[in-house]
Length: 229
Image (cartoon, rainbow, N blue to C red; front, side):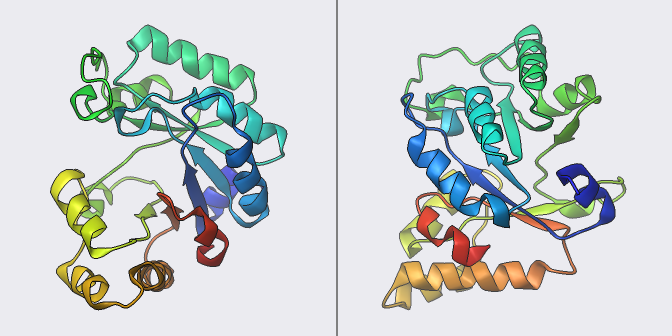
């Protein structure tokens, strides 16, 4: 049963987000992908995450696909106009990539090169309408507002490494709100990372029966992915 069938069947889905390298050596990412590939339903490859320059997600998805693992190709509207985005989707499809996650994208002003011109010819909703022949995903910050649609919800999980990380995310990452009770727990913990992994695991278990699956974003704690999965 492939990823699309599992979504339609209502199975509890597990996906993991991996960030491409800044150079051309993808061996570390592929090692992680092979390690967890049989335990997740798909691996999502990010597109210049946080407006920082990295290797093309289409290239990395192709490498992941060669290992027999289902990739989800993330594409943002920040860096390409509508022609460029459609060209990228068609190129990915020609290489066997079937699944896409579309985001409007973080502005270049927060990235490593604020001089870069942000395009935003389309937003992610408009891009999804254009690409409706594929299986695509969107990001929603409020589930209640989207419940009228026949779609599946995968809840994003970021394992917290420290109270400082939680506070930073609350202050600077749009759409994320770490409850104060978790900030307090991490502040008092002897080993904040261990406590953060525990919180993530408990949250995933609580989501079973509520959400259709989870999307784990390890953000530097890839060594704990197998445990979380």
